Length: 172
Image 1 (tube, rainbow, N blue to C red):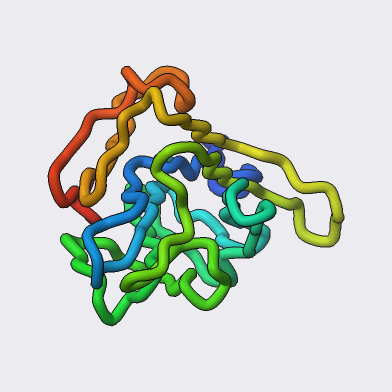
Image 2: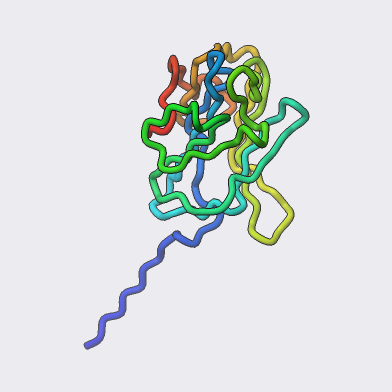
């Protein structure tokens, strides 16, 4: 008797299930802005083709780069990693040079009105897909040094973001 078992895994699924879980726009002077991304898949996500953008400042966008993020792990995008508090992110990426995120006294994200976009491009293709977008305006009441942590639902609804003084960069 021979038993054959087929298992289906989504490890090769593209794009992976990366989401924006927390961000800080306009921290107190001297500290960097940051965006936390979580891989909600059970398998590692290939970071090739993933990008982050913002609408303020003429609409800037940058690719995250190469490598992989293990399932359930955090990628912390920072305006200046050397000044960045990290509470457990497996990867910390510098997005200050791309001017997507601000650092020190220079802010990239506008706390009164902006859009943060997580994008993905299939390798070898030119078309970019927005996988998650957070659009806010002054009605959100974002304050300096207050992070916003997504609690589910529509990412562009302010009631789906919990506020935290100082935030928890890099923690799940």
